[in-house]
Image (cartoon, rainbow, N blue to C red; front, top):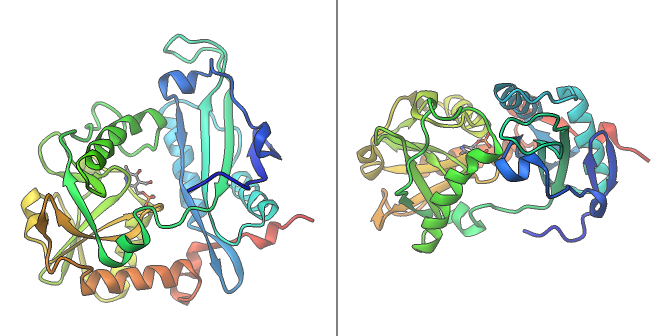
Length: 312
Ligand SMILES: Cc1ncc(COP(=O)(O)O)c(C=O)c1O
């Protein structure tokens, strides 16, 4: 991943050169993580670049902000339009989009008094988050010694900046020990999620994933994978999962905007299923990529063409 060669960024209502979008070191968000963000992918389709489930992402952006009482001064429609304009100006055929809303510079008490709300949207080329090989062959993961925080501590369904320190601890430990990703357990020892992904396990042809009660972010890719799986004739059950369910699974995979649909082939040195991308995972993954790339008419409802806002 690199931020080189990006020309434009959207900040507080206007598109400006990338280099000009700076923030003061006294910004509240920098000190306390007071901000919320999103991750959205834009894919190349036969009809041009298209944003995947952009409305759901910007609705979650607003919902995350509401929990923290940050008032985003732009509607879902305005943010969508701004994103399309930004992608067009950068002339990206496909990209990853990162909207962020954070408390700016004003005061540094913990309560963000008189701090302006800053909103920005960045876009850049970001290929497979867990590697192209991971997408094809599956990734090796480890159970993190860090537990996922419980919803009585922080709102697990919000995508807030400071909350990601929990994920940073988990993924740093996993990398140090030579794994591709961490899996966090919840406060009660049940499976929660990856540092930036939701989890699915497959046993005897049934697909299982956990739920909001299990301290997870309610992923938009998770929701897409459930719909794709059901459309493909599979049974999907949402229930709490134990570590045992993963260790004894025939197949497992992660979902996320960055990670897309990534098979899991090994956990802490124990092989899952045949130690490669399983056949059900492959079917869901293939349908997912057909959906996001506009090749499956059943799912074009999830795509928002960028082109309709092309500026000259
Ligand atoms: C902690 C966490 N869980 C799950 C997900 C997957 O969510 P989505 O599919 O909406 O990207 C993400 C990524 O946004 C995440 O950061």
